[in-house]
Image (cartoon, rainbow, N blue to C red; front, side):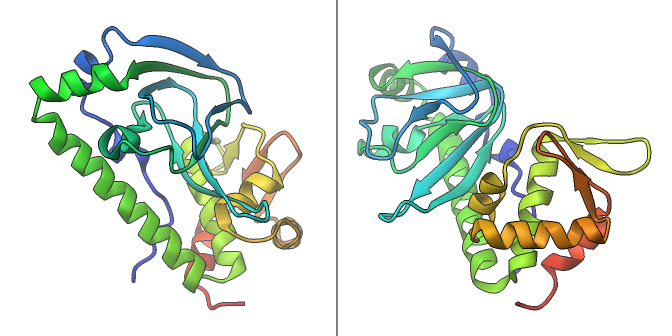
Length: 229
């Protein structure tokens, strides 16, 4: 199976022609960095459109281990699965930075879908994309080395919060913790710290607790194609 190093959430966005009428009368909601939009198991009483910021979608094991299964950027619809199957939330959603969302209730969603059946095609495309994301994540966890999984997480972060510099580096200005990278990569935090320390010595990455700088994206991509540790 080919492993995609980056999952582009723009493919999971509802076309504006559909999202605009669905959320035209939606209630705005601010979410501060670190705040929980909803938790796994909560009632699925509505869905959201992300206008600004980044969200992470997480699941947690019974022993408290967290895994980030997706990052959502502006344009993404959040919580649509519960609108379709009427079951509780399947995952938790947390703000990576300050976010602005619009909320529409289950009732408003149902009325919109009843009068806009073509919207279901867009929802099917979103669900298909997220299934492919899950397949890629499972393949990465199964087949990639620890270094490959950490590299994949950093490259994915580069897509969402990275800014290219004039010297060819990519700077991640958002405060990204080792725990965040570990949750995205599906490896223990101490293993992430070990890998990052090695890459700092090799000057593949630099930075501090407030930002990371990816100095050699090509080398990180090669780690994704490497052998298992």
